[in-house]
Amino acid sequence: MALCGGVGASALPSELIVHIFSFLSARDKLRASAVCSRWRECLFYPALWTELKLRVGGGTNGSGSGIDETPKLEFLMRKIGCFVRELQLEFAPVEGYLSPLHGVEGRMEPAESDPQFADRWKDAMNTYLDQVLCVLNSIRNNRNLQKLSLYGDTCILQDEGILDSSHLHQVDQGSKKIKEIQQLFEEVLANSRRVKWLSSAFMLGMVTPSSLAAMSNPSATSLEHLSLLDNQLPSLVPAIEMERLLNLRSLALDFCDFTSDMCRLLSRSDHMPLHRLSLLINGTALAGKSLDGTASEDDWKALVRHSGNLRVYVMALDVRSQDLLTVLKPSLPLERIHFDSYSTCTSVATVELISLQYHKTLTHFILIRDEAGFPDLSDNRNEDPLVLLAWRCIHLSVLVIHGYTVWAHNLVAISRLRGSNLRVLAVSEESIDFDPDPVFYLEEDPVHNLIKEVSLGLGRVWHPMMDTSIVLSEPFQHFYREMQSFSEGM
Picture 1 (cartoon, one colour):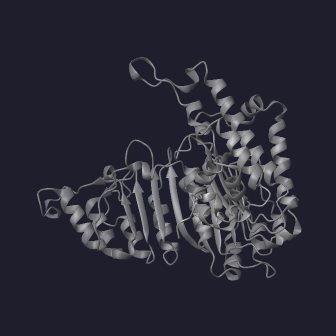
Picture 2: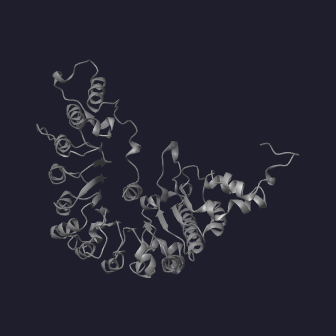
Picture 3: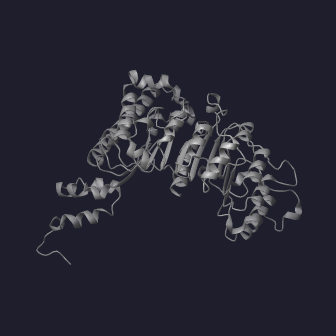
């Protein structure tokens, strides 16, 4: 019904305005809050902010962020921090600060050659730390917080090799901000009463081995998902802390931190069965972290007996094959595995071991290599290990390959073996090679024939993957997002 007498939207009751605003995104709500005090009052009604998902910094996804974004974040968190129930934030240093400058004739000079580089990354890190402080300060007394998920997308800094403690001390004199962040995080856990989901991934020293001990007993009892990762030493999840987490159903951590003691604790009858376990194996970190104390075959058997529906997701980042062969225990209920490497190469023995041991549980197999040269796993043999994987693994639904040679006739065989059950078959165009045997070519154009044969096998239109940026994403970010969706799918 039209409003009479020229009366505008201000005449609407607050309840109706709140309902209308509930359809807006978080950013649109913030923009609308600048219209007038009445709208601002309605826009920060607690029912509109039960959940917040936000990416801060990085200059991606249209965020247009940087130092100028900090006041906006402070305003938002000051308004909603005390009552928001589900908070999922991704923090990233601003790309503009750290992008290298163009050299002579368009050549890209190394970032370190820029005399202003040191100041740029210090500004980026200071902004990053200030924004983390802002968020933790705003939620420190929030007793209704049920989900807290924080991710530090610091891959830009990792690429430049400026993530060690000496560089952080240059930015944060005396580690004052880092210590304050650690203290605030412990306060958040201590003051919480009903946290069900706690995730901190690569947050630059925010979590310490004593952080989890600060969690209140009510939250320790209610916690269902825990993921603490930062590639640092020592373990962020001491096994003894599992004593209190009786209702844990999903866990994500560094593989080296999943010890025999922890596995045995999770197998006890007083703990709820575990449903999802995500493990990151970082080959670079293995130099300082030993695999010796990790769960044994007997530990895995006990855990599987207690947790019959347990499924495991493993990401192996630049891990040597000999290490993988010791990690992949027969009783580990592997559902998804992702190999991502720059310098190492996944061996035929590893692929064959996976297809033999996990043929009843494996659904996702991702094989990525970002390096010149494309190794041929088939090694001129009649039995290609990837074809055998597709044949043996009866539940395989996702197969992604880049950086390894895949022969066209083997790709056709894979499509026919798994058919429409193979929901994702992503193979980069540059990874595909063609058998010189003319019998395979039914038409003049081998690519066209390959597309037709694979499409027939899958029962849908298929094409080689042209955009490799889809799979060549930052590995830690990929693990974080896959782990989130894997755990939420319990």
